Image (cartoon, rainbow, N blue to C red; front, side, top):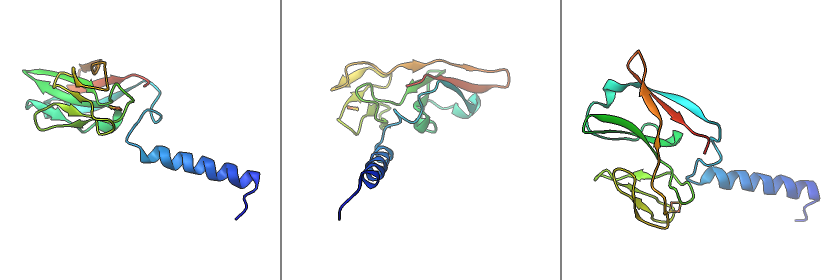
Length: 133
Ligand code: FES
C-alpha cells in the first residue's frame, strides 16, 4: 500500500495520539494549574493513602491527624505512581520507589515527591492546588 503525504501525516498523528493515550502519564493531559475540590475533609478521617485523585496527579494522605496532598507523578518522567500497602509508592515505568512521605528510596528518580498546596475551606472541603505539570 502506498501512502500519499496527507495519508502519511494522518497516520502518524493518529499513532502519536494513540501512543500517548496508552501511556500511564498525565504529563501532557493537564498542564494548566487548577484547584480541585476533594469533597469533605471528614471523609478522609482514617490514616492512609487515598487514590481517588491519582488521575488528577495527587494522592490525599492522612497521617497523624494531618491531611495533605502528595504528587502522584514520578519525578523521573512523570508516570503515575501506585500506592503500595505499606503506604510507599512505586513507579511502574522504570521502578523508582518513594517512602510514605515522598522521599526517593530507589531511582532512577532523584527528586522527592512534592507536597501540593491544600487547605480546608469554610464548608469543610479539602481544596488542592495542582500546578501545571
Ligand atoms: Fe518513574 Fe521513570 S518515570 S522511574
